[in-house]
Length: 207
Image 1 (cartoon, helix red, strand yellow):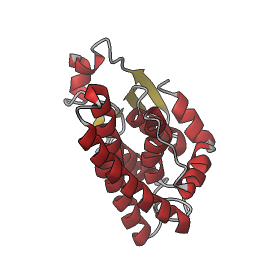
Image 2 (cartoon, rainbow, N blue to C red):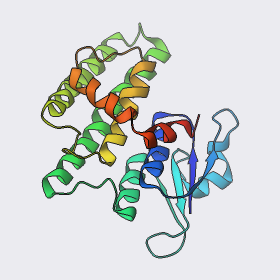
Image 3 (cartoon, rainbow, N blue to C red):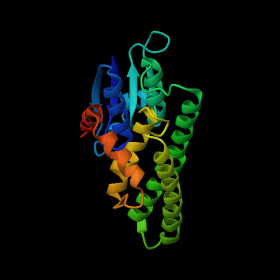
Image 4 (cartoon, rainbow, N blue to C red):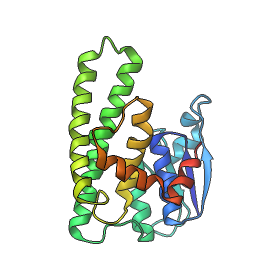
């Protein structure tokens, strides 16, 4: 059994979508930002960094309970545990890893930077917002080009890296008022991913 600690954020949606896609039974513990749940003694034993998502697998790699945090690590762990949503070939595995890094250090980080600088003082941070927005557009252009030649990010099969990306595209970008008009291939991919029943079920979990 997997115990999932989560909240309704892009990272939180990733974990529940993955669990629905791979079909593992899990119990949800929703944490509340306002109540201090993230800094509670009980949760810090699960993730000392005090961030969601986090899981406890009662049947971990060595047979006993195993706690794991960080959304991309959770996606990869669950894919390897179940043998599902893993790229089939060495090239596809390399592509999945490449896009996982782009999502974490590029698209996701740039979206977060724009969000935080707008929230703090958009006028004061205008040059930094412009730089982050330009970097985001560069990465989205590359992602669109990839999805022109490939159905999904790793290849022709839906994998864990598509789950990593979808929350940035379908949740964070709309929150920031950013559209996909310039990226038709990403739009096609987004619609295909969001149409998956397991994605829809997982998206509803932290809400």
